[in-house]
Image (cartoon, one colour):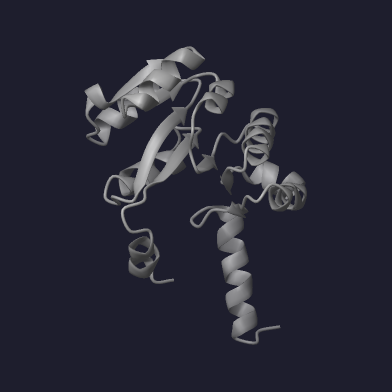
Length: 176
């Protein structure tokens, strides 16, 4: 994929992203990379460990004044209006924010499915990192997303996506 063409096609538009499981390893790598991509704006980070999320942002050299912990819908809306990154410990607060995609990386099935379904029903795209959910509900979530003009996909860089990539590459090479 030619990423220059992809991001050039956006023009000045920014893709607004919420990341769940924010204090985990996948989120750390994603957040480090997103800082270098002007077309991506992280609007919310969900994790039960808000202190760990703040520490991660600090370690990645995000400015403290650009984010804050929010505990209510009013807080998250205020954050978004002021261009701040909302850090939340209640995933239900995501529904008070406007964004284009959620990267779901909690690894907690009961939370992950609720986040995905809620987002899809709002027409928000899903990048699924939580293999536990994708392996059980991925096809169903994909159909649900199609019904709501959203995209459901596994993310590049995690086990399911890597396995799919290896499998399809082997088929391209005509390996059987």
